[in-house]
Structure formats: C-alpha cells, structure tokens
Image 1 (spheres, rainbow, N blue to C red):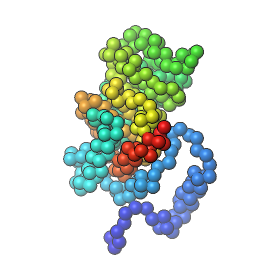
Image 2 (cartoon, rainbow, N blue to C red):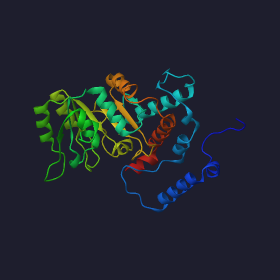
Image 3 (spheres, one colour):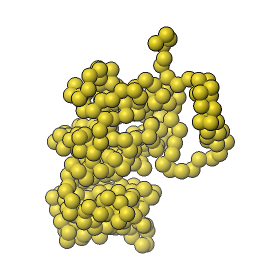
Image 4 (spheres, rainbow, N blue to C red):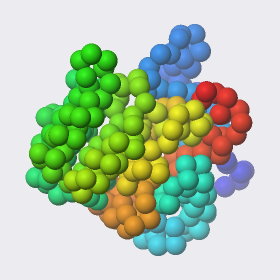
Length: 292
C-alpha cells in the first residue's frame, strides 16, 4: 500500500458510496438529537469504534490463540488473549470465551455445552421477563428442549423461589437458567445455587441486561455461584455488539468446543478487539461511577 491505512476514512466513503454515507450521517444525527431509552442499546467509545473499523476486520481466525486453522494470526492472537485476560480480571472468572457473535449465540453455546436435545431446562417464562432463548416456542430453545418455566409472584413481582425449587425437584432439570430481559430486581443467586445443588443441575446465568452493573460493582456478581454466565457486550458494558461467556475452569473445554467448532466459525476479530477495549474501560473509576 502506498500509505498506511489504519481505519475508516469517511471522506472516502462519501466519495465512493454517498448513499450509505448519507445513512451513517442521518443515523448519527438521530442518535445525537433523540433520547435513547432502549435497554439493549448504548453508545460505544470512539476507541471501540476505531477497533471495529480497523484492519482486524480483514482477518479470518478460526480456532483459539495459538491453535488457529489459518496462518498470519499472530496479531489477532494478541488481541484475543488481551480480551480474555481482561474479562477474567474484571469479573473474577476462571475462564472466558470472547468469541460469540451475539448474546443469543452465546446462549446457543451454553445449551450445546451442557445439554442435548430433549433434556429438561428450567428457565424464566417469557411473559414473566425471560428471553426468547429461555424456551420460547418460536425459538430453537423451545423446539429442541423440554423447557419448564417459572415466574414471578403475583403479589410482589419477584421471582417465586419456592415455585422454582418445587419445579426443580419435580422435573430434575439438567440446567437451571436465571436471568431475564425484563426483571428490574436483584436475583438471589445464592438461593438458585442451593436449588441447583439440591437437584444436581448446572447453574446458568444469562446476565445480558445487568452484567455492566456487575462490572461497575453496583450490584452483586453471579460469578461466585454460577457454573456458566453468558451475556452481551453492547448493553451497559458499552462495548461492540457481541457476546461473551464466563465459566468455571472445569467447564472451559466444553464451552470452547461449543463455541467453535460447535456453534460458529471464525470470530469477528475487530469486535474481539473492541470487547478488549470496552473491558479496560469498565475497569476504571469513571465506569464504576457511571454504573452506580
């Protein structure tokens, strides 16, 4: 190349494709002039955006650091290793997989790591605050698994832990999922852990909507209790659109195998780098102030 190219050149985009450039400018104005109250959206930093628009987008890297199926992965190995180390340090986790393309992809990997089609999984009902991947009939989870749903109490709209325990004892699920998309209260992870231990179930926490508050030390962490925690990186974490999985070290081989080759091919390395940047930002006092 005649000149060093690092990242996006908006002037070039305007010249080459004014239609798409106009869309980007219009969306920028929309975000700058409207109040955004969608819980699953946030604003990334300029540093994260720089990584997303970098030359890492050009690299294919099936596999894991040091064990790729393509050559020339020395630099992307560094980026992924940094992201893994930062995730483990930030959350106090034994293992981290930073490759999932989305939160739903991360959830697919969790099912694949710990269950097989037809197994019983206990998860929160969608009308009570659960997610599509927690057993909705229109989703793979509701089609491939025997989903038993629990809900919230009518009097206080808090999780009914007595019902949860009764259902667990009656159905002997292979895995119990806690976490939701529309549950504005804290979850008692210690209680859920006790129920999982009583029936011998894997404890899975889908922390997509609150993991940023955990990172900012604003609410208790599920990490000490859960076997596996999945989440998105683009909500309160303020990272790129993507997913991540944390787990106990004993589950690391199953998780990694479920993500690749079980669920997806090569990771999006520009997004992996963006996740690493966001994780570093989450470790700052400024982020803790934001989370609280």
